[in-house]
Length: 210
Image 1 (cartoon, rainbow, N blue to C red):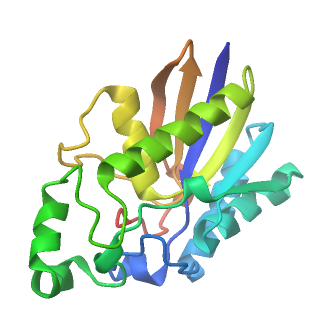
Image 2 (cartoon, rainbow, N blue to C red; image 1 turned 90 degrees about the vertical axis):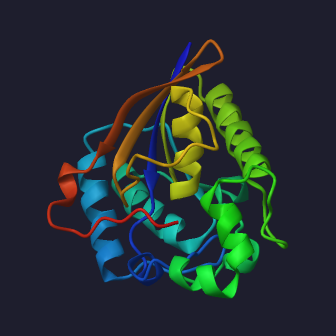
């Protein structure tokens, strides 16, 4: 039995534009992000979803509400869909991190599996959280199609899990705001079916910063 999941990164925030690390800080959508969410919802309305899930952070939840309003569904909220907690790096730009927290930035840059930014979440723990929640959703919605609105880091983990890429390898793929990314789960295995469908966004700004 196959579960089909459309996973969508939230719309843009001002911190995305500034390349400032948000992590689990609750930063709202900006005007561009709200426009992206509406454009995504219009495009995704060509599909039918049995359920819509979202991270509880407002940038994801408000994006999800744009889609839910077209689907006449209630958004199901889960903290397990949150972005990774980046500890001491949250609220700084990547350039600032190099000087303010050089050791933390160095371990971030090499994708150290076990480093938790002193007060945050290790990449290994984050990956396990993401895979666990998506396995649960796949089991709960067998033979159904659902949408999940979350974050770049969450998409990064599932992309690697479905394609066999290691967590430590550099990210060489884009994770644009409000693009549609399609995965299937069948017989305990994940497969990536389509990545980065963003034609509906037109000239709207895209970014890949967490």
